[in-house]
Image (cartoon, rainbow, N blue to C red; front, side, top):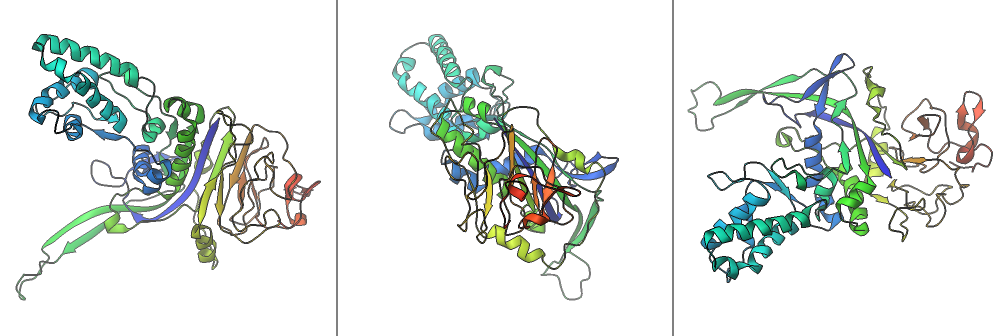
Amino acid sequence: MFIELHMIQNFVPSNLNRDDTGSPKDCEFGGVRRARISSQCLKRAIREAPVFERTVATPKGVRTKRLVERMLELWPADKAQPAEAEPVLAELVSELLSKLEKSGKTQVLVFISPEELQQMVDGVLAQWEALMAVTDKERSRAIKEMAKELERAFRGRTSAPDIALFGRMLASNPSLNLDAACQVAHAISTHRVSMEMDFYTAVDELNPDDTAGAGMMGFIGYDSACFYRYARLDWEQLLKNLDGDVALARRTVEGFLRAAVAAVPTGKQNSFAAHNPPSFLLAVVREDGMGWNLANAFERPVYPRAWGPATWPRRWRPWGSTGIGWSPSTAATPSARWRRWIWTPTCPSTAWASTARPTWRPGSGGSWPGCPPPRRHHERAVAAPLRPHAVLGCPEPLHRARHRPGTLQEWSGGPALRRAGAPPHRARGGPGRPAHGCAGGPGGTAGR
């Protein structure tokens, strides 16, 4: 099973992700220059988002060269002095993970979980007396054997949800590599951009009154862009990376979805404060098949249009209180009744849901209250646009309406955009043709 995430996110003037010259990253796409945010930048923002750690409720991994220092912090004070333990721990790190430099740091950054670090320390503690009672040559042999045991224990699994999501590559010991369960695309702007320069000055406040000029001056690059973001999560790979822990895998998916929406890169935020939430979110669940990165929809650059006076009410209502949920099943592998990921804004009651925060009915086979069961298909797309009366979970093909925002859904006929809250006679399956199913065609329900 695959979960795909599509987002449209518009940022005010900012410099969220810089290149080697300090300018915002960019690229060429569709024959024009586009603003760009690298996938590494987005993944770190997701990992560091407080909502991710709160949701997964499990310690996340750490990427560092200071492994020996961290292990010494975990070393019990009553066992031995850190000065005695340091060379043993350093030799274990060198054998298992990466060679050490003269400074005591590893030659490469190592992505490792707190549990794995603790296992390494515990392994040395368990054999500490024996290690101290033998010669240096025998100690080195014992440490090599310990490293092999730990390697077998770490291979193909991790306890850290972020390592399970984004994978691990260790060139010095490829057997500890972990395939990522989540693929994140570089975010690119949907339109042409031109980098601008901000000339800034600072005043020396202790200068005499008759002194002219600034105490400091400089330039900083920035741009402003509306980005398309895409990510794809492989549930089976995630479950494998987490050693079959279904509960942790579910929390990890939820944490990823929440953090992907809430996280914003931190670059130059003190200067620009570009804290802009996504304007549109679409989650797609697939049984199999290739991924659908929809960036080619913007190969021809789009041009901005006015949103109109209703921008503020449309924006703040869904963000007042949001949630992502599902109807879980007891099976270890997600079944058709579990695969219902929704973004649920707080909204008034509709004909489909009598509660303020609609959720899926457990065991309903994918139907909303008052909505006939959907036809069988290999994927379902659910989305919550900016309108407070968004209708979620209706899988039938619909005509692309001439307004926004609306609900984007994928079906065998291709993407379609439907007006949320439209009465049955207003919804169309195409020019002159009523849509079928939930939208008000045959078997439809009134009052969308």
